[in-house]
Amino acid sequence: MVSSDEKEERKPPARSMTIMVLLLAHGYRRADGPGAVALQRGSARHPAANPPQPALSLDPTQVAAGKALFARQDCINCHRVGGKGGGDLGPDLSGTGTRNPDLDWQIRHLKEPSSVEEGSTMPSYKKLSEADLRALAIYMLSLK
Ligand code: HEC
Image (cartoon, rainbow, N blue to C red):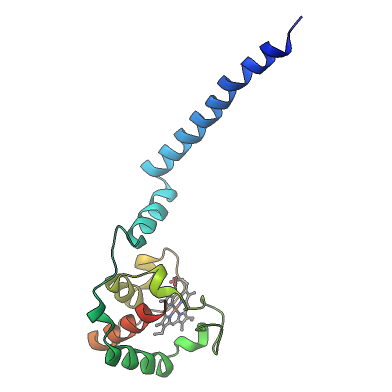
């Protein structure tokens, strides 16, 4: 006859097996496969791993120039800011400065969205001048 105490004893090994399998699966995902890209992207965006640019990059003149460009380009066809205006083919951009606090990331994303966001359908803005791209990116960083 199996006592209830014996039954209880069988549970811990079963549980640690599950944990081991989960850890292994996680390990494999980190090593390679599609998950690896997502993880790298995640850490590149992590504020601690990639601290925001110094405050001087959020020069109010640049923010204003970027905001004007944003209205003049067709960004607004796909994006809203704070739920206002525009379309919804792309995400609402409020908070993008917190989600992607790196100036270089923002510029690279504008030049070639799919180079930093796998499979992105956002059009490339590499036709814009470096100064315009920078102003737009700085405006993006100001959207906390
Ligand atoms: C045809 C629609 C379209 C247009 C036009 C467009 N975007 Fe996007 N945008 C997207 C889509 C879709 C995504 C989501 C995929 C990605 O992150 O690339 C996105 C993502 C973004 C992101 C990242 C958002 C986040 O926080 O994850 C930023 C920043 C951005 N767009 C800025 C801009 C700016 C600035 C312009 C204009 C110069 C613009 N977009 C024009 C469709 C568009």
